[in-house]
Image 1 (cartoon, rainbow, N blue to C red):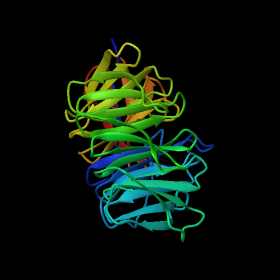
Image 2: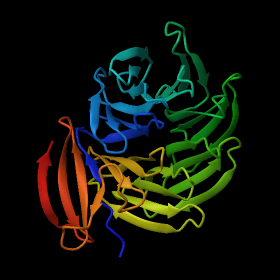
Image 3: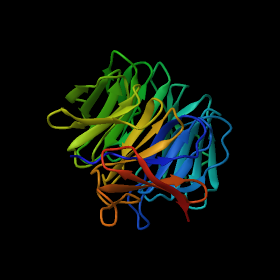
Image 4: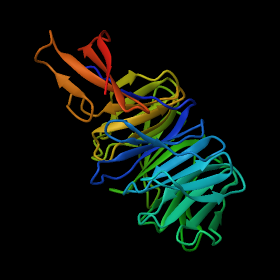
Length: 347
């Protein structure tokens, strides 16, 4: 029998978690940032969910958050009409970039020298972080609020998704749209996979995969419920998606068949992303929590420990991260049951 999927629950936020992003793999591991309507984006150790710090300074809901590959810089997009750049090591605010409306999306170039933003004023902006006093480059064309904006093709092109039910591919230099896609519903999420140049899009109950350079359709998959976010595994073997019914769905990428589904959140799932090593994926929800899920259930990784000797029957030891004291709630869960065997706090 398959072992039960038991996620790590990362508490600390007090409002819905609406966006999350992983860094690349660094000499110190990899890291996870979350955006929340409580206005307090949080940084965590990516493989354990351990709370590292909270970025304080926004005066409204934070709608978007990202880290550069090296996890030395963070950026956030907020309802206070600003995007902020942070030193991810010290937690200090480095720059505040004023906008004319709510900012929904932030994304660094590969060299971390430029920041792309998008939001409710329908304009894409490119900031040179080495010249913060300079006016940003602007790209206009969307007719409704921009939900997500991402660099692609070695930072020579930009992908944007908006409430006008379109996705557009832009040339960075000419600032002209190269191609656009139209949908029957607003796009709820967009993920760009540089390795293989795949674009993952969700709208309504549909998860769609496109070639990022040409926006040619690869395949679509229909889910049982409205989907808010989806993420493709780095090896492109399968993908996960979550949405209105509180469930996470796992699909085989080649056959499009549902492999499994499971519920852990107590509210709609707003965001889901695979870690850079593919060993886990993180989800953020209306319930105010992040949860980390194992790609290979039962594997010893991060805080997941499977211990058989010394226990009656097969017992999965699961550690729950509890900020800000960096303590773990330890629960032993017997295989295929939700029965609590032991609960304690330890330093």
